[in-house]
Image 1 (spheres, rainbow, N blue to C red):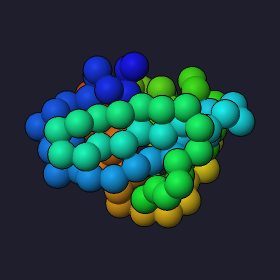
Image 2: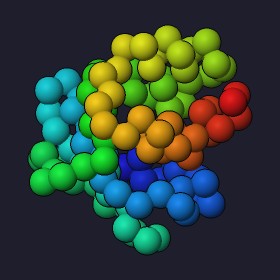
Image 3: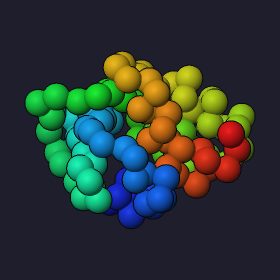
Image 4: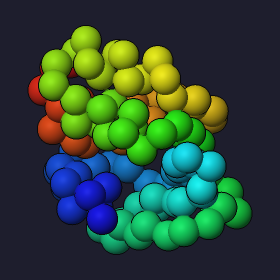
Amino acid sequence: LTLRSMIDGAAAAPLEGTIRLTLDGEDFSWTKDGEDIRLARGTPDRWRVSIAGAPDVLAGWLFGEGEEAMLAAADQLSVEGDLDFAMRFADCFGAASSDF
């Protein structure tokens, strides 16, 4: 729910695609299609980027206080695929956009 409700709509406007999120071994997908944002359980058929790690680490990356906290969290995540898309996704949340 947080990945849908806490996102900056204006910053997310140009994003289109699916992110595979593997959190503590469980797969989820975050998909943005136009203005529609969907979250779902399970492995998506295709994705632009896959991000894996612990939920608290992902939260630290997206919502962490300051650049140092974000970098420490990012170092604990596994990211495969379109790294630029992952970074633009992170920029859509408060902490990520305020420090870079």
